[in-house]
Length: 75
Ligand SMILES: [Zn+2]
Ligand SMILES: [Zn+2]
Image 1 (cartoon, rainbow, N blue to C red):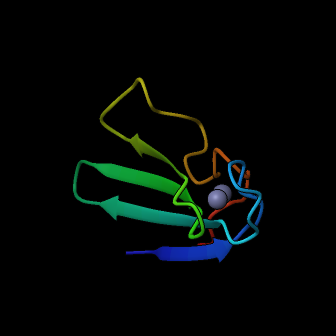
Image 2 (cartoon, protein in one colour):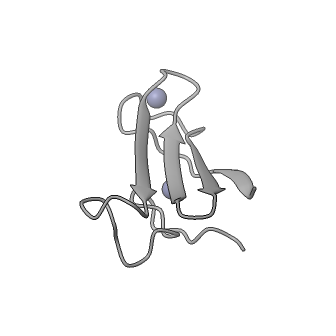
Image 3 (cartoon, helix red, strand yellow):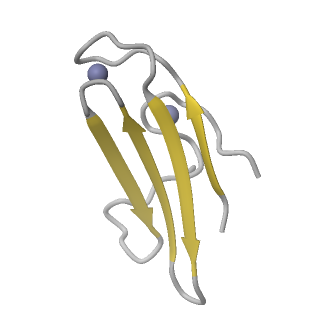
């Protein structure tokens, strides 16, 4: 399961520079979940989004692009 985390800086809440961007992918036979998390270790500010292949409401064209910083998950 791919899992990666990078530091993207700039917390919108405390102006800290250690916000991390984390990507996770879960895949089984008929379900795929791409999930993103931005988290600031200084103040705990957290943003998460998950794209599920079985949920049309959350489906986007490019689930491997971070909705917060726009980076593409490495493959
Ligand atoms: Zn913060
Ligand atoms: Zn990001």
